[in-house]
Image 1 (cartoon, rainbow, N blue to C red):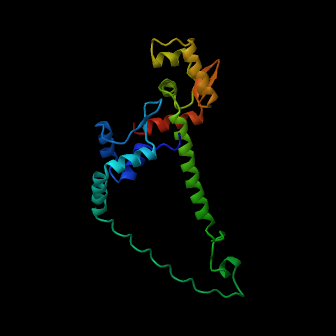
Image 2: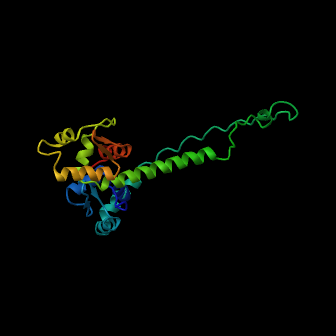
Length: 211
């Protein structure tokens, strides 16, 4: 499931604006897509490549238009730091003798930690997206009615928020609750239902992701 491409990724692969690619899909002119249980569309890279092979002229034209766009101006060079004057080795503190260098080692550890943090955030977002892609529309509806601030909502109230026709004791509804609890997206007790931290992340991902 994680090998499937989103619309934005396919648009970048084809060098076309995402909105233009979505318009092509709506008109039935884009690559073959896969419809997930949540109603969202995803694409296999092989299907995209097959579509490119049949529409090489249009894709090349789009790529040429992108290449013809003016390149952004290069950033201004950073100012060169002034050299630190030497300090008498026989006097002053160790920090002064070392040129006033702060306690950090200066070996790039801070930059490495920042890069690791960015990588972790990216991996976390990918994992959240993979969970969201596996949810059915009925499961998404349950997540969408629970309070985002983590307070409890009674099971009958949750069922009513989804639809007045849903019985909170029906086997289908209780099965959805059990599946979401097993996936650690919600807590379910005698108090009712509430979102877990993972459930909040998945819901935010679903709300912010384009269809």
